[in-house]
Image 1 (cartoon, helix red, strand yellow):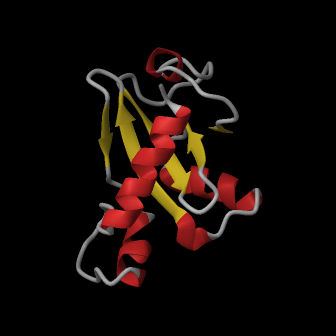
Image 2: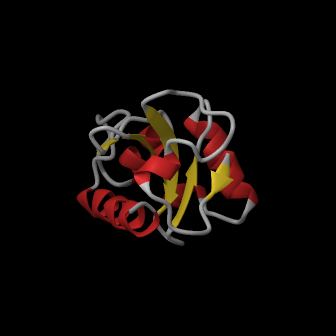
Length: 114
């Protein structure tokens, strides 16, 4: 598990650490307030805890997956349900329902992954 501190390519992201939990994709959590991106854990909650330990606010953290080939963001994480409710989407589950949050996540991913 790491918080990215420099831009990486999709190819390098696929081999970012010795331990990769999934072959074709990687779990990520973005802090949409601070613009941080944590990657590579078995569960989004582990990445959430890593960012919380670094001072992130829980309300700003969203989980998603990045598929390598083709490059794609999949908005699916258990940590998103409370954020959806707080943003006024009480019946939406594990996706990211807030369009502003999705746009910010895409911006953060684009900044850290080239």
